[in-house]
Length: 394
Image (cartoon, rainbow, N blue to C red; front, top):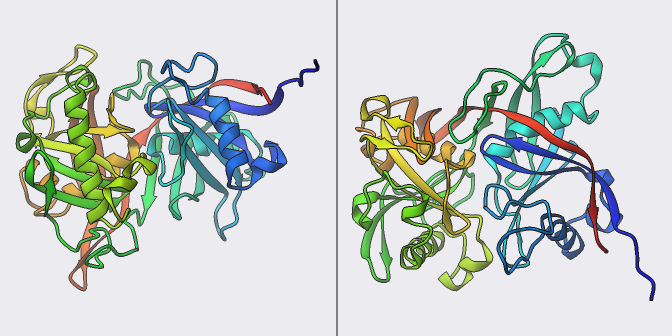
């Protein structure tokens, strides 16, 4: 009986923000996986080690959490004025499914350094020391991201003293600008970033009844609800929710109803096939709590508390794209996020999450009676964890 050798594919294993994933150059993938479809999905599933009925990813590169079961494909940009195209795949853990419906804001921070290190940027354009801006086309959602990468001695600077709650060690700061992050499409009401046209809607959720919600598509489609309306304080950590099957079912019911109202799916039965989006998050006014690291967070140091779920579990910190949604919703008077932060107009907000705090900014304005956001800004960090070849059985 003959056995085929494993595929050997050039790759980088990178952390970006509070996530990590396997990064590929498009041209390094097997030919069948260079285009969307079953061959690409099967390859990435096997790289990560999914589906894994044990939920451990022992036989793959995944980390068995939504933050660590990710793949990125980078190519020379097809868009005028951009440097690279960035395609993101969220790999399910226990099912054979790759969700391409959204972006990862955390891994966005690693795309710029990856592009520079892998020859997508002409070396002559790079400063010897300073900051170089990589213009990234986010191919999943058709948006522009500016990734401001620090350069030292002509190379990407990875080490530094920038601390990011949710990441154990400091690194160099990378500033991200998400340009025009709100959706241009239309839901029920044809609103730009608010698919129903409303700042606050009411969802009919089985087991909960009528639930106020802000449905926004900025950074990533997100359903925001008040913590108090679902029996929480907004200071919960992962262990308070992720082991509670009843709670997780409730959040999935909220997410499914929000997805239908936002026009992302036609019926709640389709929610399982769209796991990455929308996100569901709950908000509460600022209050004291202790983060997962043991760090004490004071109410006076934050504007509000936010907790968000990703791929069916409470996130250990905050997804980058959800942070864009938080910044945008906080900037618009009348949303649940804005009201939890104390109301009024604002361009920056600092919120508390399970691992600590995060400051984000957004500039929103009304144009013809419709709210639009020009950009959202946040700081992240990124570094290469390992580089070489990933081995994949065939």
